[in-house]
Length: 185
Image (cartoon, rainbow, N blue to C red):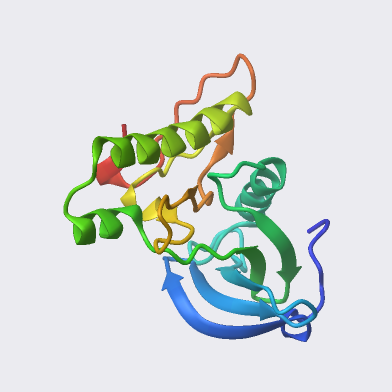
């Protein structure tokens, strides 16, 4: 894959605890050795055979990477680096350590109108930015709306997980169904 470093990620990053996992990916906290900055390393399991259903195809990984490379917005997770080995593509992403917005709201129990407005505005700003770039997230749900840091007065929202996002070409209709069934709109 063009632009993916074929070096051992652990030469540059020290891996830490697992932060989460999905069907074909595991996310771990990591620290860049040269700067001591912390990031999240998303290990995406590559599909070995085109006929296999296990793992993620090259085309799907490249689509996610191309979208992440194109977007730069304060309410959307940032891609820092990319590595590839025999079994995985490893995306080094901005560390979003404040947890899910949903959990924050459940813990807090109530918000002021101002707080609710600020959260909604940040989510809509991120979505509007994506749409201005003709990008559809296709999996916007509570688990993919995170807080950069929940221990600050006005937490920043971050939209994450662009695994099924698509860039829609002008004039094309998109008829596929994507996303988590409970949240498909």
